[in-house]
Length: 194
Image (tube, rainbow, N blue to C red; front, side, top):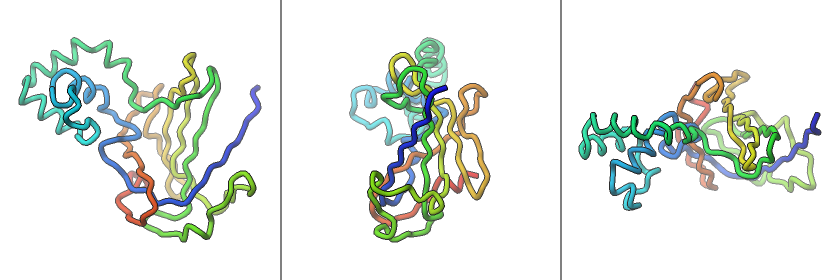
């Protein structure tokens, strides 16, 4: 059995969510195919793909090629769609290695914690587990290209866990991405998805 290695990295920041560049995106395959083949402005880079929701991309495509054209695109590019992951891969995970990434938070949703009170050097100090709460756990397995294929994303809230992505069970529920910054501007967060 492989030795388990633990690494801790923590820093002071506040996170807000983004609803278009999702951590788990159940519609990613369709969005990419429509953006690549149906909407010239996206294909040519005139519109940032991540600034548009699936509904906006679908509506734009419908105006250009209609509902039948959209369904024909999905059928024509079915093999390509099957190769598009619903969750981005993690670069640099060696073949056969399992990776568990646990994103923790110190403050509860909408709660400010003075950053200087807990910022420390992760190489010099022991990680203070008791001060943090599990937020998101991402499980990945390294493939032959040293890419971590994410196979499970679990969210945590007050001792409860809920699976939002499981590649084997066919579970895929949209999870917003996190944008970290140093400004305490709280928007709806992951903990409210339960």
